[in-house]
Length: 154
Length: 465
Image (cartoon, rainbow over all chains, first blue to last red; front, side, top):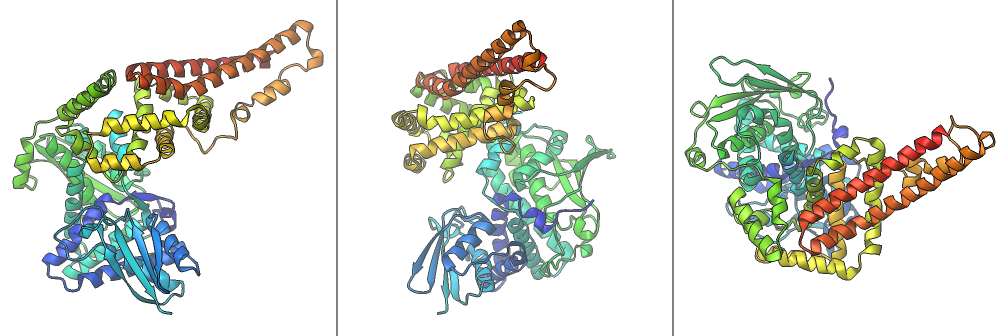
């Protein structure tokens, strides 16, 4: 008997509700174990996710807005709204973020840090130089929608 | 049947779906971080299982009313593991075998699931980032799927807790692809409550009165009253059966208003089906399943043509009026913001999902019903076995023409029934008589079935002539 390959799983979908709650409990676990720099750990997790997924998806685009839209939709099944501010700043709004739904009052960092860490790695893989990125708002931290930003170097 | 549909399908509709690789690689990263913190594979596996349990407990508490629909019997709950699996992961438990093993001093046998394909381990070790060595996990603990095992176990135990059952289920992953095994094996053991881990909150849950399964007759009764009475009956039913207010029930769907409309379309088909399982019986015949698929397509395409916009808007208003006072205000506002045309589309989407579940394969449909039934061929040229036009006697020629006419007549009758279906349903709804709606639809489906059968009989006769 041979198991699924990651390529086999590309066409399948999973319900993330329970795992979303697990991410919250995982952040609480880190907090209770006095783990330092949770935000960067979450971002590193995202980077690792991207490193494994990049060869699977082969997402390519020269246009930042198209590329961001492709990453959010293909990787997370998210339909996002993207606005450009100034020359190099892109604001991504996700009303149905896969990692956030409820306001979690007892966590310091948003689960979205995983997502922005992952997305910036995909952007880098497409040749973009990401100067800064992060989570502006998160439903997990009480906001109405999740808002992420990515700033490129000119 | 009803609870299978509720648990499996509604959860599917309400759940937030992501591509499986994102789910599984995120799972891996959580596991890796826990391992990095604990520096001990066995400890990491145990914490992973605990996190799975906690994350699922939270979801189970939110979906308690759906989970109460499961049977109050540990063995049966274990047998429903594939449904729980599907509910959690959104994908079917593929290619599995179930074994039983007698357990000494236990009232229940252990149930062993041998699963040939595991999405959790799927593709593991194919990337440099797959660094967890599950071979270091001590025997007796779950391995790579520890977190998901925790999720499955918690759903099973939550069901038993809420039903006041004195037993709990312990699930251990005893074989794992990541360990080099050729399958995933889940060993499910039933333990008396006192032997399983006990928490103070369990005592509180034990005191909850067990509820009974939803009776669909009550749903029909509910719709036999005018709007205010429906609201009253609906509130009573939700309080009696689910031990919560409609506001609390509908709050589960907050931010998922569109999905709720899909569920209504979905429920309508299942409700019709419950009346003698008529749709289920019909779709067992492949040809009829195809016709139903075409009926759906036609009805959807015709909805714009046959239903004036005002009527759709009126029904949307009626629906919003029904929701006012029952659902949270914020949710009612969301319903108001959905355009009437989108509501129709969502409703039809739910209908389509239900028909697919019952066996209608929309992907395999040809362009139109005529091609599907090969009626055009039958009318244009005689079938293979039959005589050519020249060989026919005058009487045979007359009979064949008569059959062709009858086929055309049946097709027209069939189309009338199809086109009339939404109208009947809506008119019945206007008169607040869902019971008549159900029976009208039942009659309608009987008529449709009769016409389809007639067409097939006539085609056979044509062949014989």
